[in-house]
Length: 536
Image (tube, rainbow, N blue to C red):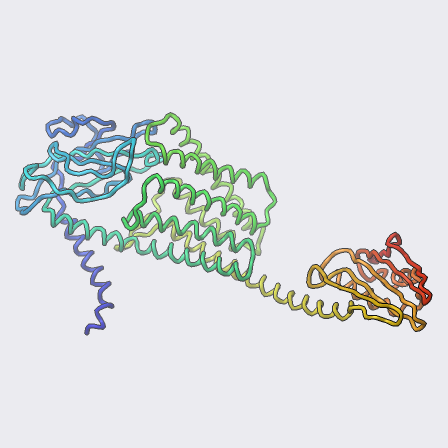
């Protein structure tokens, strides 16, 4: 039976953690008074005898973020009953505490716990359970809890949501078990989002590998979009779950930089896929990217209130709306105007629709059973999968076409080597030649034609253009040369002009030289140009 244990371990942990979370939630103490809050900072608010009845009441345990010009400080006061049959050392547990960067917890006027440090030297730390000193409170008593919190300006910039916090006083061992069970529950709930972002990251890496093999700018850009969405999402989830702890300033810089890079690459991807030439509109989208992320970078790093924050808030909102409208508008245009890439346009538009829903303040987070789903990430996953398949197919077809063209060029190269063969010595003449085209086939040519009387005719030329078209013109010239009845340079050029006129396009600059047996030479210089005009 032992070999079956690993298979049963995961569902066993899942069931136990769920039951433990349910049990712990059922045992949470209910406050005897509603939570009341107040913006600002005053140490006397920790005094258990302070009269807080004039403070606003938190609605369903939630309160608004501080104002845009506030210093970020606020206090919450609540009275918590202590279980009468609690035995052993007591502790207080803080849960659902929102996006604050530093806080302190007072019980009956005594500081019992601290997370992080307050401005100007902010340090971000997280803990949930704090042991109470002996005598602070006793089983069966009513404890007055005062919660002092500080929110960085970024925490309340443009927020339409609310902050919250919950408190529980019980046996230290029980609260630590409850905290551990809640952490397991959070890990399980975040499983779908972690899995989706991991798959998106794998798709991004796969596109990057495919780009190294097949080439293509759009593959590289699409890979960048997928990686720069999934990796920051995994990074944020790891931070919220306590898996990864990074100083908040560094976290702010990294987050803003990755977001700006992701948006900039999205713009480049769309202009590349759709072949857009609207440079002004592109510059406007890039300016919107800067208008979103530059204020956010500034607000992420400041700790003191600033009169610039409301202005930055407005600038950020305007930039966000402008960026969404530009990107969504281009995708909508491409959906109707570029039918061959309609599905790509729909996939990219889906990302913007989900983002727009988030900007409107609509909650995109849903709980299905024990699992937490983010509709934005679901939409991005669907779009990523569609982009991966469609761009992968396009790149594969392009690679196959390039491979077939490569085979054709190799065959043309072999034919040209036969047509423009190295010259060899003839009686009375020593000849050395080299023919090295810049590509597989070239548009330059030469031909050395010895005569029966020991004379020599040399023809050297250059075809306009490059590649396979120029090589085909060279082949036509080489085929027409042997049919020339004369060895006089002017008549040779006239023969070539007559033979090729109307057969090929472009022009050829050609020089012909005749060397007689006595060493005299008749030369037609490049000033005499052989023109080959396509017949209409």
